[in-house]
Length: 565
Image: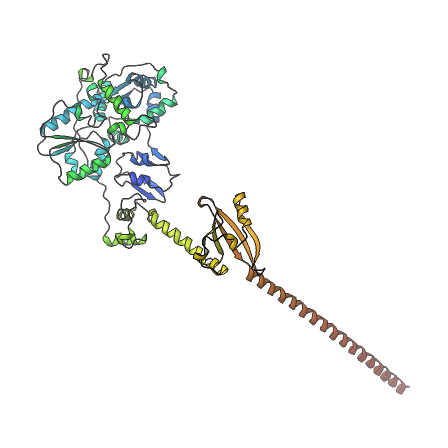
């Protein structure tokens, strides 16, 4: 089940999610962040890190609503964190859930009691070894997917939710729909894999549901929960689970660990055999469950949540009978963890070198390890590229250098004359074409006023109007040179780009062509005139010849006629 991912739009290539992910479960494909399900531990850090808030969380809210619409009985397993988030009593929260249509509401702490008893027994029986609690779904995924060698140290006990779900099914009937509400995203994966859990909602989804139904806690009737367990309410705070122990073995060190980074460091230390006789109480979230990723936008300080949980733990409501005294039901709390290891292919040194060379890194000095791509080192990034988890273009220094190279090439080789002028109307840069045109070096030109080279009025006009000037025709060098001037504002850098296109040669060429055209016309006219003269002379000669011919033929005719007579 793909519990979390990112919307396919609006990804801005900041790689904040890649940086935040502690297990490299995010790949970038076609400039889009994608969560790899086989590596993801659903800790939610990537969603918290995303500045554009383009998170996509699989929701089962509509499924729960459909249960209620069909008239099916819904039993809620309510995580203790809820009592730290909402600034109302547990009875008000229960009343709101029943107003929404839920039949039963119990604390998840009811299931925690059996888990605590199992952990305590294991702790008492430990001998020169280490073990890791399994009540955090995200930690379980971390070990199964990334530290499979440590699975034997993961206590094979169901989570409090899984135990409570079984108790609810036994108590209210297997047809009853069990719905968990808490701060955890990894619980959605746990719920998908456990047949006794029908749906998982986050606190964020509960807030949404209450808002959609326009419920006001002040207007909601207070109702007692159907089952509570006061002794187990500290589970969602750091060290809260082990604080529920009634006995502790003297030579066993109970070590609470919160935050995924610290969990990983401890697991790596366990692999190196740095610890012994340690009972690790692990929670993937910083500050444990009260710092969960799916609490929503409730503006409740993390320490305020902790204080509320502790206060609720001390609250002894005479109307609420502890579940341990009323629940006669028992479940088998044992479970089996699976090896879900998702390896990353390891390229050879030559292959890593080739990938690094492709992004302009030819020596260790080029490997800046700046982390802008989301990876801690350039070599990690190269390995990610090899595994099709990253793209070469994710390297910011490389892309910056590439863009600057292109810009410098264009700036240096363009035949157009380019001057960069600041708002004080002094030169800050010029390209080689400008240096040749004005017969000055860049070092000599920098900080000179623009008036040394051009009229400053157009620049003042651009500054005052905040409008670019394009296509102004100018003559320079005593009318010997003609240019087209354009002045472009680069607003964020507070400079103006002056581009001059020298038309002098073009104009000279056009004038030369014009002269050639005029000469050609003159020559054509001369030819026409000569042809007219020739035609007139030919006509004159033809006229004389015709007259002579007529006279001769007439005489010949007369002679012939005389002889006949």
